Image (cartoon, rainbow, N blue to C red; front, side):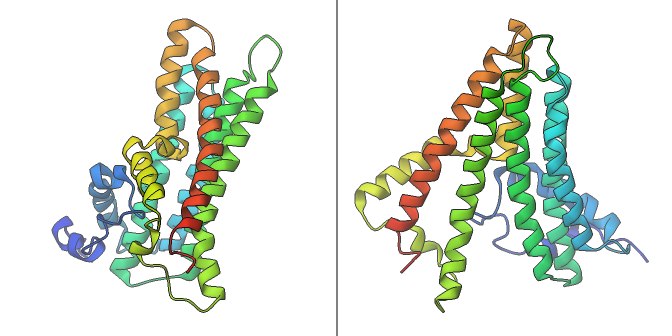
Length: 259
């Protein structure tokens, strides 16, 4: 069977709105990964590979970011970025294959969400263990592992706060939330939200951004010949995660999403 061309795939697997989703599409997907995933799609659409199998593979790559980051120095940071990029690639491909085949699955959607949780958590836990210097000649400093785990918990809670809006609405018989309902009802809260969105500091606890930050910090650590910058990064990400967890909860309660 002949493989479809990228031009044939594009209108089906990238219908209007896919790249423009406010909260459902990552900037890396819009910038480059959706174009790369199209090239992978055309080799998979006529195979026996299922979208759910790709979702499981996506999750495996996301989890592998943690042990990858335990490799000392720049090589470990590069491996971490690679695992996260493969996670992101298959996060695109599984949905695109499902659209082409019209092969949708509630289990696939569920595992996709679990995979997103695990990838973010794996990167931050791996970062904390990396900063603790597991393979160093000195004493392991578990404070940094704790802070990395704290950051991972915050990243998971932020996603859970969003997902639980849908759970709450479903259990009370309300329809899915509309995008406009996410706007805060008070002008002060709306201004604070716009400021946070402009700064985008909260995105640093997400897997893609965190892995890239870890790579930059690994280069700086190599120049300095210690783990100062990685440890500083872990502390900053833990602080961001805790602050964002609280602010995101307040933002949801101040919006119309639970009305």
